[in-house]
Picture 1 (cartoon, rainbow, N blue to C red):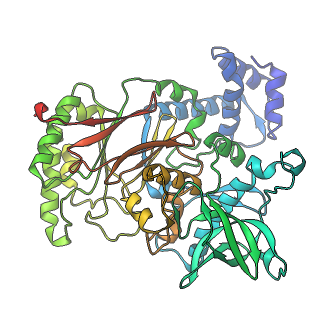
Picture 2: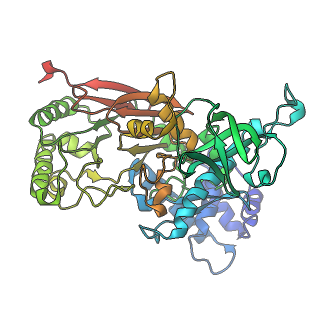
Picture 3: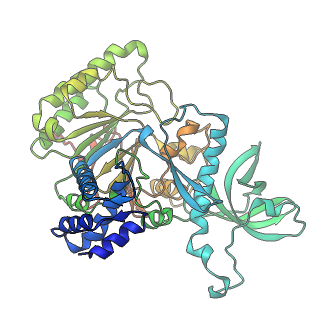
Length: 519
C-alpha cells in the first residue's frame, strides 16, 4: 500500500496539495483492495477530482470521500451496462495531427449531417494522415538502412511534391490515394499533390485495390509518370500498438457513454469470460415471408432456456423494397415479430434485440451512415419488446472489453465491381477483410460507388482495429486478420436459414442452421 508521502506526492504531480488527514483516509480506502490495483485506483481518484468543484488546490478528507464515490459509481455503471449499442452521434472523431505528431478526439454532437465543402476535403485528409502515421511508424520504415540485409534497398516514403521537376529516372515508394482525375488514366494523390501512375506492369499484393483506396506504390518515376512495379496495402497495426501510440490516457476513442476505454477495466475482463455468453447474428430476415417467421419461432424456442446476450437482426427486413405508401404493411410486420418475441418472456427479459437496417429497407436515403428504421414503423414491436434497440447502419457495440462494428451491406460484390485488379487466389472474402483493416475503413471506395455523409465518415473508420467486424453480406464467410474476427452470417433466406453465433469468451464464430426436423 502506498505511504502517505507517496500519496501526497502523487497529488502534487497534478498541482494538488493532499492534507494529512485526507491521505490517511485514502490509505484506509485502499487497504481492502488488492495491492496491484492501488496505483490504478489512486489515478482514478485524481481524475475524479477534476469533476468536483474545489475552492482551492488543497484536497480535504471530504473531497477524497466525494471522489471515491464518483469512482465507485463509474465502476458500477460499467458493470450494470456490459452491452452498449452506440449511436453514430456518440462516436468521437479521431484525428491525427501531423504537425503535432499526436491524436486528438473531437466530439461530433454539433456536426451538421450534410456538412460543408471543407468536410469533404477533411474526409480524405483524415484517412490519409492516419494511414501515413501508421505506415511511417511500421518497423520496415523505421529500420535503419545499415541494419538491413540489403542496405541498397530503401523503404523511405516519398512525397509527391518531391517528384515535381525531377528530370532523371529514380526509384520511389509512394503512399497515396488512387484516383481517376482524367478519363482512362490513374493518378496517385497525397497531401502534397498528385502524379499520374501507370499500372500496366504492376504486381499486386493481397487485397482488393479499389479507386479511392490508399496504396503503397513502388516503381520508377520517369517523364512525370510513376511506372508501378509493385502495389500493396498499407501495413496493418495491432490494436494494442495503436492504442499505445494514441496516447489518450485510456480515453474512450470508440464511442458511447463511457468516459474511459473499456480496455482498461479489469472487472469487465473477468465478466467477459462467461462461456455461456453469445451473440446470434442473422441477415436478410424477411418478415413478409411466412416460412421465415416459422423459422424464427423455432430458433427462439431453441434459445428460450439459454438466452443469448443479443440477437443481431440485420435487414433487409422485406423481400421487396417498400415505399412510404406501404408504411402500414411495414408497421404490421414488425408488430407481428414483436408478438412472436413476446411469447418468450425469458428472452424478452434477458436478451437484447438489435435491429440494423439493410440497403432496401424504408429510409430517407442510401447514403451512409443510414439512420435507424423509422420509429413509427417499429412502435408496436418496441411496446411488446422493451429490450429492442434500433441501430444505425453501420453501428458499434461494446460488450465488456470487446469492441464490435456492424455493417449491413453487400460489400464483397460492391468492392469487386470497383477494384482495378481482381485477386487470383479466389478467396475474395479474406481479401475484403484485409482491405478493410489495412485501409482502416469499412468502405474504402469512391463516394460515387458508396456515398457517405462527409461529416460522418469517421463513423466508418476502423482505427484502432476492433475485436469483431460483422459485415452482413449476402454471402456467408468467416476470416480473421490483425487479431480481428471478420464474418458475415449470409442471407438467412437464401442460405437455407443459416446464421452465425459469436462466443466472446473464446472469440470463436460458429455457423448454425435451423433444420427441417426442428420444425
